[in-house]
Image (cartoon, rainbow, N blue to C red; front, side, top):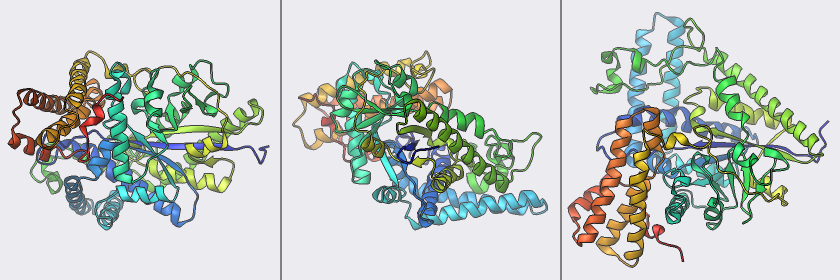
Amino acid sequence: MQHKNVKRQLVITLVAHQGYTRCIEKSIPSIWQNTLFPAITDTYIPLLKMMENLQKDEVPFSLSLVLSPTLCALLDDPVVQEEYSLWLERLIALGEQEIERTKNMPDLAALVKFYVKQLKQKKNFFTLCGGMLLPKFAEFASVGHIEFLVTAASFCFLPHYRKLNEAIDAQIEMGLVSHRNYFGAIPEGFWLPAMGYMEGLEKNIRKYGFSYTVLDSHGFLFSEPMPQNGVFSPACCRNSLAVFGRDPKTPEDINQNFVKNAVYRNQNGDIGFDFPLDDLQPLLQGQRERCVTGFKYWAQKSPKTIYNHCAADKQAALDAAKFLASKEERLEKASRELGGKSVSLVCAIDARDLGQNWYEGIYWLEQVFRQAAQSGGITCTSYSDVLRKQPDLQEISPFMSANEGSGYAENLLDKSNSWMLRYALKAAERMVDLADRFSGDSGLKERCLNLAAKQVLIAQSSDWPRMLHAGIKSDYACDIFKYSVQGFSTIYDSLGANSVSTEWLTRTEKDFPLFPWINYRIFGKKR
């Protein structure tokens, strides 16, 4: 039986990131159609609508949220907002065509009408908020439903820059400045991209005022000394930075136990890749490159069975109950083993898993919050709340770790992409040198240096080596990386020759509107 003073808490964390793909094409990049736009349609708008529903029904909930600076830059970009609005209109037009095509197929027609209705509701939502999704997230943060965590400026894998402290500081500082500009507040937590940790990073994080970070379970459990409470309680580093260990079972619950249920939607079948190109022209408007449409008609069952969204929603509610029951059982057992202590679990989820990889994921999350509030056996809370109630933390020295590859992010530095790090490191070293040599400059030189700093930050992004390793849009990743490094080199050489092309600078600034408030001195040596 649960003692009334014992707390069993879940810290549910969504990590949302998108690489900055705005810098090398004047028109809409095709990559948006397969990454950013589906993310907005299937994850970000449904997430905001979910929180509206919970708030309207007075359901208590707390969500920890990471919105990477490059994702925020894209969501805040008027070009992205305009193109996405047009994209929704074209999807609706495609849907209307599909309604006509399937009018003699009742089950399929009903599904198409459901999709079109959903798209129109999302279009209306997007229009009502003026295309500005970030202020909507800020609203929920202001009333305590969201606890933000800052992350690195371009989701850089920080351990790769362990020998260049200034580059790590620049990523953290720019992430902090970016968050403050978008949301007007400074969070207590810092999220390590790819959960990449190595000894000493806690010093970089702590000196910017952050109170806590999150480690992958093995980096936390392999600490010296071993954490006495396992991942069921935070600990702290010598400099008082609190560290949480991620629950290793949550990704397994979602990706292996839930997503593969036969009634859920098959995310691999999409008319954008299955239909003749001519049938997709309401959406493609003459372009010949295929893309995700969201019109997916099949469930996971085999042979092909038409997707039933009502049955899928019922299953999602059942899976939410299973999820909560399993977490409550683990927390109860942990509390019992630890002598009745209050315990917590960090359930960190890649935002792509909810909505994009798992179409019903956002509805599942809503059910988790609703059922947790109704049962009272487990509380969904924030990192800060856990820390306030556990002031005495065990001191540990965490072990190097990541949540990619086999736990050490070897996929970000292999034969397919290791050449990138050499160039990115050299550019970062030169940027540190420029920041010190030209620390007091203004005017044209300052514009050049600010642009150079942006180019270096983007070159450091972990997105490009990840794409090369996976073989997904490799050419595009190479193009962006080379664009950034070459742009930096142009500025570096121009400053050395004391000759800057204002025409080139103005054109590149316009094509590269990331972080308009950047100050290149973030790369300077801290004294």
